[in-house]
Length: 343
Ligand SMILES: Cc1cc2nc3c(=O)[nH]c(=O)nc-3n(C[C@H](O)[C@H](O)[C@H](O)COP(=O)(O)OP(=O)(O)OC[C@H]3O[C@@H](n4cnc5c(N)ncnc54)[C@H](O)[C@@H]3O)c2cc1C
Image (cartoon, helix red, strand yellow):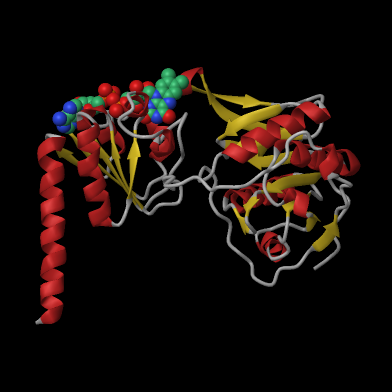
């Protein structure tokens, strides 16, 4: 592969946990590659911090990075805001990227805003689309505004880098190109534990978090489910389908289910193969989170519910009757298939 050129640098922060990269990093590298094509001579560069993260470097090349700045240091083993924000800001100041993309995960939201503050630039959070303004040749970062009813395209004219965060699953995963190579730059950040005001005493991973962003099947419930006991039935249906449970915002606000299950503008974006929406009206703020699903099945007793406008298949009926019937039929099929295999 040719040496990366000296054109405008488009950076992507590669988020990792325990040596495993978060897929949003590759989604962002795909977007960065598209932006580089729109900016003549643009170079795609990745920033990777952590400990024992070398195995991620070839993956970053495979997903489109021309160059990877990697700092591998035991001090960076677990994410802490200060060393990461100091380290990445140092790299920004040294290498002057034009654009810097970060995943809008919990970690990315925390880090991106700290970096933007340190390097005194603007940050457009939760973008749904990234392109290059054809006249100004700068980043055009589009995101929902006014409660999701309008889209705003935001330009950062004065300051650099132009920073943006994008949530997981909003952008498509680019094709992996095994064997694609690039340049590895080992970054010495000079961080010292003694300078860190926060010491890490131990690390316990959160238990039982719902990983809905990358699930293939999601059974989601809204207010029409009726209460927490309705969600117990949805969990049974999700289990029968090999999926996970999602939710609309009001039921999360009501405490029927945890926030980690929320789909939508202020929740998560999902792209499952099957999205089953039970007792969900289909407000625009919910739809922005799930309309990328391959197949949407809606159950609602109101035939005029907006969810039917985006559904591939709709069942007009009461969730309390339809969901148990679906569970019954799925279980009967599974039992039949098992019985058949014995025959
Ligand atoms: C800034 C902002 C951000 C927001 N972010 C989000 C977000 O991230 N995610 C989100 O979901 N919402 C979000 N909202 C809220 C959104 O506008 C809607 O209010 C919400 O999605 C509605 O949730 P719902 O469909 O569960 O409830 P409802 O709108 O009350 O709909 C309930 C539906 O269930 C049906 N129903 C009732 N009983 C039954 C039954 N027994 N059987 C079958 N169907 C039944 C009804 O016909 C109705 O269609 C946001 C709003 C704002 C302003």
